[in-house]
Length: 195
Ligand SMILES: [Zn+2]
Image (cartoon, rainbow, N blue to C red; front, side):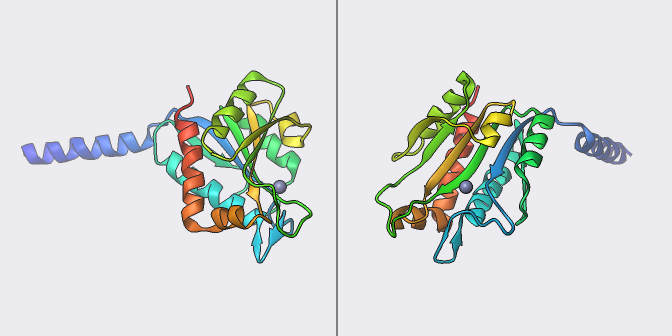
């Protein structure tokens, strides 16, 4: 009898807890490009795939924790329009938005290397850019830029160019499983270290 009661109680709490709404705050990760918009691409490697893989990795890790709920502006190989992306952001009013992109330059082998980070004309956005920059050894905070997502998002937003597709070292880093995991982990740290 006692055993039955205990079972009922524990079943009840399991069901109850699983339906308790979790009070998580939103974070939006925006994997650039998608669908027939490949972004920059070289040797069968494309920006749209790199950004989506890393975004999904960030989402998996963060959503397994209690604090934040990561929402992606696209979670498959579709080309979500820029306005749809910022409409979603402004509906969710997330704590932060990180838009992921990959750089390219006209040369065959880029002499430029590393991450470039753009921010909005606001302190929270600039501070976020600086915090991301500190995680990468060869990164540069470039500054404000008049880009759709930075202009239209009402939440603190940064746009991160993860590296140059036409720099061999960057490309190897961004397209290897190990590199992608490491990049995702850096963003996870930035998110978890936010106040
Ligand atoms: Zn891009």
